[in-house]
Each structure stands twice: as C-alpha cells, then as structure tokens.
Image 1 (cartoon, rainbow, N blue to C red):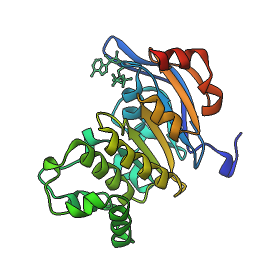
Image 2: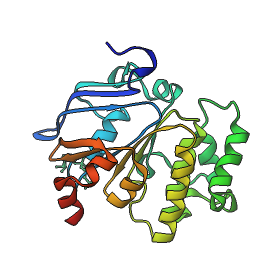
Image 3: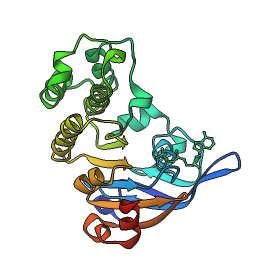
Image 4: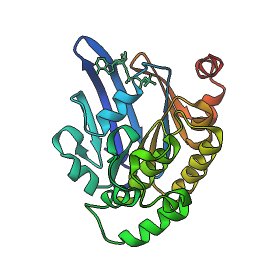
Length: 238
Ligand code: ATP
C-alpha cells in the first residue's frame, strides 16, 4: 500500500532466526525510513548481532527482510552493496595484512566512481587513518580498526549503513572521535541502523530506538519517547 518515497528503505516482517534449538529472534518487525538513524539496543544475548547479521545477508531466516524491495535472502552481497547497503563491522570486513589504504579502496571495489574524492573525505574525517595509510590493518589499535571499518563503509558511497556496536571497547577519547565522525556521516543523509549496547551513545545518535530483549522487540519509538520509558530506564539503570 505504501507508495514511492514513503516506502521504508528496510522492512523486517515476522522475522524468526534460530541457531539449532536456540531461537535468537522471535517474530521481529521493524521498519526503517530513508535518512533516519535507528538504534537497536538491548542487553547481552538479546539478539542484536543476529538481527544485523541477518540484514547483512549472513544468516538464514523465516519471515521477510527487504532492503529497497529486495529480499535479502534472494540477493547476493555484491547486489546488496551495489544497491547501497553496507554492513560495517570490524569482525567481518578488515584484511589484517593489507594496508589501511588498501582496505579503504576495497570498500569501493564495486563502485569506484569518485574513489579519490571519497578517500580524501575519509582521511578528512579520520586524520589518524591518513597518518597510518601504509600500515597493516592488523597492527592498528581497536579504535583505529573501528575507524577503518567505518571509513571503508563510507568508501562504498552507502545509502544504508549497518553499524555493529561501533562504540564497543573504546577508550573515551577514541569514542569521542567515532561519535564526531558519526555526527558528520549522519549529515550526509545516509540511513543508519546502529546496533548498540552503549545506551548513551545510542541516545545521542538515534532518531528512533528499538529495544530488543530475548529475541523480541519490547519497545520501539522515538528516542525522546523511549528515554523516559520504564523498561528502557530499568535497562539503563541495570
Ligand atoms: P551481545 O550484546 O552479547 O553480543 P546480542 O544482543 O548481539 O548479544 P546475539 O549474539 O544475537 O545477541 O545472540 C542472541 C542469542 O542467540 C543468544 O542466546 C546467543 O547465545 C544465541 N546465539 C548467537 N549466536 C549463536 C550461535 N552461533 N549458535 C548458537 N546460539 C547462538
């Protein structure tokens, strides 16, 4: 029934994902509109990584996950990337023995129009990466690897960025760098799905939040609405 530009860029309907007998996601529904940042929050084991791994095309599922009308399970990763989806996670996409610059350029292998301009933008956003452009990725600190992962996502000129816990394990000063970069990325009109256990970080950056617990969406709404929600508050308190 939705038409044209009002259609969500991502629709998750009745999504169930299991690992053998463990049901990690149970009947999850979620819509993401173009240009917004949605934060998926929840405690350990809630199903956040399972959700982003599914949207990124790495897991089998029941139900439906469509990105720009494409069913994720029926499309391969290059097709999804060509359509602007980029799953950005340190776990998945760095090549340790390649240099910082080589890793960044791999981000644009399916779309190298404007590659040099994008590289310059990434270096402007993360001067540390420019200083270390010839260094092997595996020799970077955790925070620098997180910057490289984000920078590599930007090299694909994404329309939709999936970020898997970009704040995890970062010292406060590096977290500040990542936070400022994310603010700049949001100004580029990129749609972002931000999976986060760090609620302060999610509250700072997300327009809307979905709270996952035991594989179910327990709450969803605008960040302002959910900030004073009892369940979210109890989670923040815990
Ligand atoms: P965390 O914040 O601790 O990473 P999460 O919210 O990302 O947690 P998931 O990693 O998605 O949660 O895990 C959801 C549930 O699925 C958990 O109960 C977990 O033990 C289970 N699970 C995840 N991966 C597997 C796997 N490969 N095999 C079996 N069970 C798994």
